[in-house]
Image (cartoon, helix red, strand yellow):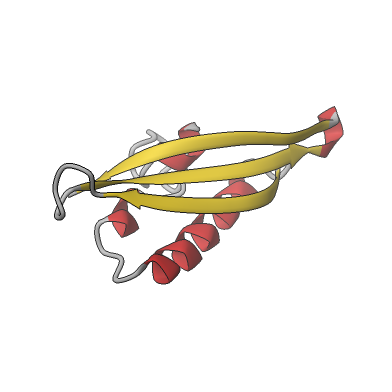
Length: 98
């Protein structure tokens, strides 16, 4: 969760820690572009900081319930940790889009 929600520069002494997703959440032109870039950034962050994780699936959903210009991007990831025999764990994070 921390890896996905952390923006570059927020972790003292480890500038590149995080997936840097907030940067793209406000500027995506369509869902496919956002998904492709988010998957790329998440995989790079996992490879660098948590190589013991194996991402399995990814999905995102944009919610504009209260306002068409402000929304929430929900990102769900399913992953495995083979060295600990952990399979099909899931994690969902929510980013606010302004």
